[in-house]
Image 1 (cartoon, rainbow, N blue to C red):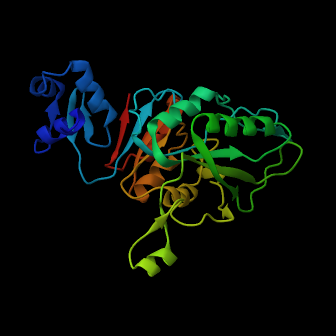
Image 2 (cartoon, one colour):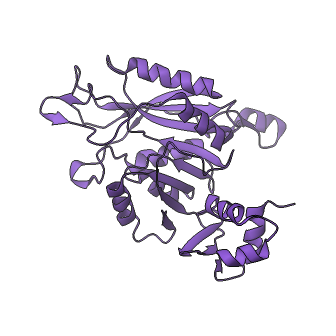
Image 3 (cartoon, one colour):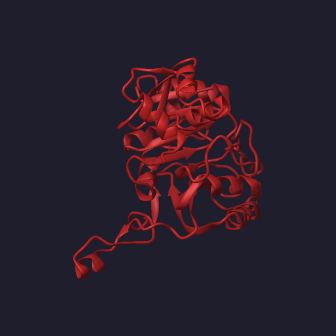
Length: 305
């Protein structure tokens, strides 16, 4: 029997819209709270909110949903509901972010705890990838970066690979050493799923066979210029082109990507560009406002909350 979300979708897929009251009436064997939860969990996937308490079904279009809230609270997401997590959390490394006449990270920062990775593991599907954009290792953060790997391992993740993001010709004059890199650290939940085409086996057995891993061999580095200062809408904004490259390595079209610390919304833009769905979470009201402005002309974007 189809689950409740699929039944709601099937019931109203031919209608222009439906209300919560309509859903309660049609599925009165389920509690109202349960019906609301199933609709909310599938916003941007099966349903789109068009007014307070009024929704419509969506099909065959990639969507991006922005939720204003704490990205460390993933309790609204179902177990194994996400195909990939790509995020650049506001890491607390104040010593490294001071130097010369500049100061970085003028927003709320924190350090991950074990439960953060337990939750990431809970919502991610088996074999799928977690991508963490992290600072390059230095004398101040090396213990924290090691701790992140430990938390990931304890939560069921396997360290897959690390690729350096070289920020083109940009050089930051902070800390002890001039720097222009960050790390793209990739984990799989359990053994990585089979995404890489196995050309030898396919030729030998005359079929399509795939081996465990990303869709193709990862590069030695991502050499991509950062967003210029005059174009930035967020202090630690990721280039859309970097996000697009990563997305193509770790996901298929139509899959669901989660960025729980959305910042500028770059992951959402990249996801739509590459025909993926995306859920963005951001708690800073100014950031969510800028994300909404960035997506203002996109018909497949919605802000929740």
